[in-house]
Length: 286
Length: 281
Image (cartoon, rainbow over all chains, first blue to last red; front, side, top):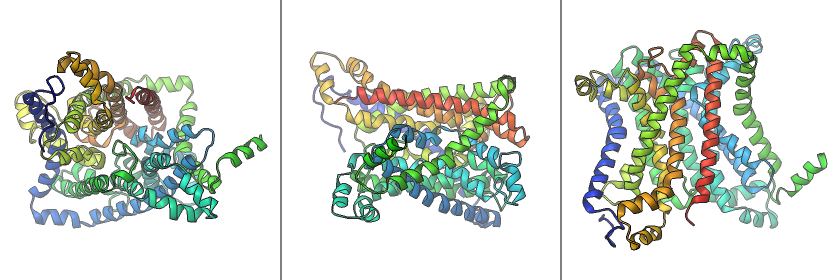
């Protein structure tokens, strides 16, 4: 792991400057990123194993784990279906307004999570457009699981599509068109030709989508109503415990989400190194 | 009209599934994203210009917006600078642990914002890891506007680094060699040859971090202190208005923020087009 040889003066920085820059960059990464990571893990273990286990095994926390898993279980597959459909339509066909469509798919990334939650309250809350209709049919959407799922769906909307679209654009439609000319049907073309080419990118998108679905706070917080044991996801449970001055409990639950984040990063790194050539160029910039 | 559409349909391509996939895409997009956002705009339009302005010009709303945009601006500028340093070191230098540090850059993308919020508070609060020494030195970070900048710094950093890395990787050494062979010292080469090529990417990273920072909620509310007029960010004020059942108030702040997001999105797209044009070939 030596530095590249100095080809000539003026082509690279002097060794002392290189070392200083490396030191500064690593120091900044440690301060900005490693320190908060260490804080969660150390604060979570500070109260001891027993306190940790009892914070995790508390019924409200277990209910939050179940709800978080349910939300991810509903959001991720829907996003897979949407992402594949959008990528297929956008990359295999020519039609007007394509660039606008791509921009609109990316839109949720530039909307504040709180605004994402608010729009569903405006539609389905008691004062919302469909509020009366929902009440008449005795269907609770806001301050209930369906609202949480919708808000999570909004914020995770672009994840799978934006991994597949650039990759499938690079790959073009030649292989699929060849398969079609040999008489293969749509499903067969997708499963036999397209899917093997995009499966790692799909997994990459699913990974990021899942992390966001399980970790979303702002949007879910607005529509949840924070009913303990009923409409609290794991991130909301962290907030509730923290606001009750139960820091040990809050950090214990937070450490679960941190482990999920580390697992996500580990799998992401593995995908980039092992299957980097099957991901879209620049897939790691989000 | 119908025949034009039908012709375009047939011309779309030889593969099957166009109608089905485009139909699914448009339906889904409309139901989940477009119609809900339209609902917000229609609700805001229903207030009329006068009613809208009355809420928007409220002192507490203005203070919250100023704080959100101001702290996001400062955090994004710092992110753009330290992100450039980090991206440069990760791309240009080889040292042990580089892959690990590189992978860690994405942590703010993967870590739920609430977790980041309580972790940063534990570090920077008066009795916290760093907060203790900082406060005895007279620097207050948590429960003050500085805490908001610290939180936004965390969530925005990956945008700055990840936007810059591919551009630095694709820089051609020939340009730097040419400058050096013409007698430019290293600093002049970096300033005159490298910087102009990476500037659009730096600006894109800055804009992305800024856009994220303006709307950020989870990581901020724990560390900010949330004092009206002082450390209360705009997204929090939306939540407070909703809890007061003041839907109009929440809607107006949300439209202001949405307008700002669209403006930033437009800016980023323009920058990225310039970036794609200006990239070395």
